[in-house]
Image (cartoon, rainbow over all chains, first blue to last red):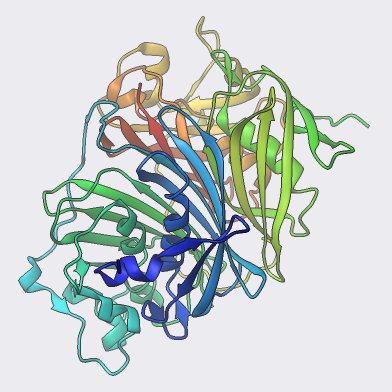
Length: 263
Length: 263
């Protein structure tokens, strides 16, 4: 049976006889000629979740080693350790015989609270969805943006206006364009789905991801996700991008951090 | 020739004939009965830096899979990919035949700036070293604290006073007690060297690390390091601890984030 939603179809992998997994990296999640990093990680996780016994990715770290390209992809996936509360596993994405991405992930079960909620902080203050700006109709619209309903704040439109605000921030509301509801696996994609926050500081320059870590805190409720990504320190070409994702129920669902290199 | 400093001695590993590395996890970096997590990662990096051709760990991600213990340790270390600008490698720490820690790291060369410095932010505002408090003479002093000269701010003494401030912050100045100067490898240890910031929110409770990511931005200048660690969101027992480390010259040298589980 075909998966009904684009995301699930495009991350699907099939076990091969030599103990690997095979899939296709489509161009539907491209930024320019290159598949989005969060999409690449989601493919690795699609293989890992078939071998671990815990359902939710709690902590995912991805090291980007070489530029990926649309086309066939193989995943080498292995359990590192399977414990009572957590499982840890690692994966490599291989294209044309070349390793391009390394992912390690700790899985757990977010349906079983394992401790107290002492402070959840507060979600970023954004205008309501209706007060933000859909990303449609622009001649330079990256292909990946067609997969989302993304409503950016007025201060986050630099990718379309070319006018950086001088503040390394990018914020807005996001969901899948085909109404697929968010889940823990999709949060890894959403953590890398907005245009880089550094665009708002340095203008539009390539800023490929070197490393991405996502911590998933909760399974998101259906509906819009509220996101904010911030870059504070750009030193010798390297910069961090710290993200928060909150769900429609007002819960923190993920924190992300990536290391980018400004070109 | 013996290494002159305790840290270098205690992370040293030797290649074995079966392509692994062997070392001893000493109890000199213990917190209670358990070797500190940053120290464990530093042992993995000591093996990795013998196989990669770039000198500096730029992005290190560690997934803690089982409690380590003082004693013999084996490291399985492998190159994932060697590129022009970066090398990526992975390592596992094995004790008693059991995998306990998985580390992936991207290495580069921080002596070669690869891009602009656009904003470096500002270091956290702390009292001068002389206005902070050395951690000595306390009957419960964790063994690892004897390896550092650690001067905590007045608001960060919860581990000794038992009185949380109600703010998830821990800050102070740190250097090695034996005057070894900091370098990129040691920053991984310093990123996990202060008492957990969550103590200042929830009191003294075990809060083991599930995952730790450190991004090294610069080789530190000699002298004191200025550190601040903050926990904002404690949800269902999981929490983040975000760290900044700045060097004596006022440069940002590392950002860290860990996922802890409150017990």
